[in-house]
Image (cartoon, rainbow, N blue to C red):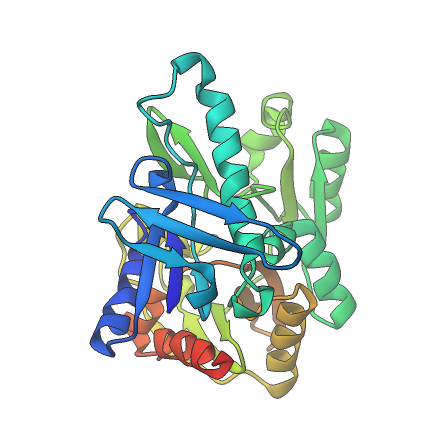
Length: 324
């Protein structure tokens, strides 16, 4: 049985499940926000005989010994059980999160496409850039700072051609809605109001001219490379998502074949972080060079399968078949 740990809103997991149902592959889905509301967990540790049992509100029981693979994608915090006193809510949520983490650790590490501990370790953008450079990738000159003088000097040193983006991830909440913090080009207004913009740490990088963006998806031994033709529109030149997501522009995509050395580097950085799946963002430049930007250890892939017919979900399913 394949265990899928996700949340109720994750369309990528829905997309994978459609294929599992088509192929009549047994699976069990838990949405992490429903813990304590729709299912309970027993974890038993006893002289090496360690296992867990999931009990859901439909009367089903799933023993961890029956799980032959685990796919985790975008788990979210459990909600507070209605029976718990509001004064104990934050404590209950912390304990619930730690119990879910304990469940992940009870299940054999080898059964995961990406184990959560490696997902967590792989998500630091600065470490990614450092390791990418060590492995042989080209990377843009990069700075993280809140010091006005340091930032302004970096901008000047890089010919006033610099972009700024978030240190962790590009999402924030505004008026109860999740917003994307797109990568932006640093302009004169930014420099003139540096005391305002520099209050929060950001990543600053020299802007790299590009022919197009590249999304590389790795699943086990398979690699799928897509060109995102972001330079067709002004709105998507800096951050292709700004044109695609914010403006609703239908960007063109195409299947590309990366040079063998670049493919090897993509596999190397994925393995370096202990991962079997990764989504890597590259840039291809007018002087025919490839630059590494960042790696998402749990990035979306369904839209690429839809646009380019990449068999990504079949590769995910096949990966678990290889474990049997």
